[in-house]
Length: 564
Image 1 (cartoon, rainbow, N blue to C red):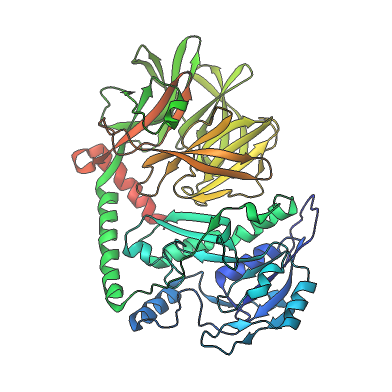
Image 2: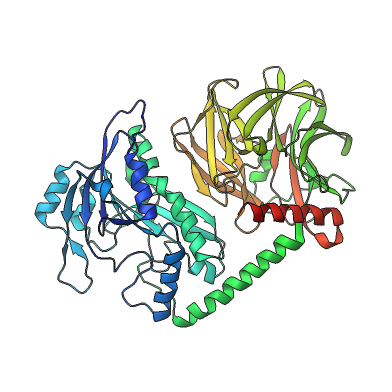
């Protein structure tokens, strides 16, 4: 295995694992391969148990239909394929646990084995088995014993991962990396990910297990850079202890529920499209932190039905409000960058200002020194492009490609403590739920990817949705919530940590669509324009009454089917 070069490594990291035998699930093997690809991370110890009775999705007393259902899911899943991993364990010290003389068949480690583990000087152990009694082992590794939990830990045990989310028609599938404890206030949360619940249990499993393979490596980034001071300061989760396994009747009802969900999704996909419009709120962006406040939106009037307008950004310049936005005509099918002058509640001087052969949207505006720049979304060009205004707002030229070979979505810049940070998602890797950060010391310098990319995995609060803003010494970041609807509402996050080594934010506020308007079904942009705030809203339009929208929708559906 080729080792990656790690610069500025301050310490060697040693870890161990607990597993059934040398045959690992594909996602477990990938997790180890990512860790072992680093030249300062070493697998030093393996504890075998040789008992697969307590794996993901197995239970001591399942219904016969659940056994059949689980076997079908395992057969189709790419992440739950067993793979021989002997080569990973070559030269690694191995310990075989003993089976306890009790009905629970849990393995136990003898004092001599615990002593060997202590002598290994491990930083952490990853527990891939629920069939070993950890006991005193929990306190031996420097940073504890880590384990994954799949599903909502307060509602679901591991026996039916991502089954109940579909059965109860919940919107979110979740996974967690935890530092285990022997009780008390619960397990310490290390990493987490939340994706939109798919109607297919197998897809939910593969999507989330694929995402979580990099989490132990992210924790090693923290260890390497001294970011982990005391795991006891982390958030804690209390896991449900009572197992709930689907009954035979619930297994029978399950495909019926799946069919209804898929039928509903197909109908929405085929016969509705989003009809977006832009608007101005005569209030500063900070007022959207007030949950109880209702905002009056001055929408662009007499919106034609042959196009939509979205993603507004603006500047207050020379006593005039200028709006830059995405303009998409249904017949053309690609977005262009357009502008308005906004004066005394009127939208005037409308024109297309940047027109390329590829799709453009989300025209983020930036004033830097004495110049004005725009970074529209240009993922089809596989570039993050910086355009410079030669005559604002009508004339623009490509100034620089900031990031090459990267299909950036909704790139949003902010200068924080002298460093430029670019927030985006990647069209090719979780565009709705994986947040990436790039940083540079100079706007025109070299942009580096954050060492923990993706820095966050959450369908509810990742994809950028407008300008970052500061209020009362705090930094806030608008993002899109995809959990119930595609681009359905906005989540405002408060950033707690932002540096070249680390990132952490928490949800501060959720903004619902503007119910007192025609465009009341969705909203996905919140941006600052002086003392005003720009927003957008969408009506889910029935396309059979609009031929242009129908052609546009059919083209998108066909492209989606081709890419599958």
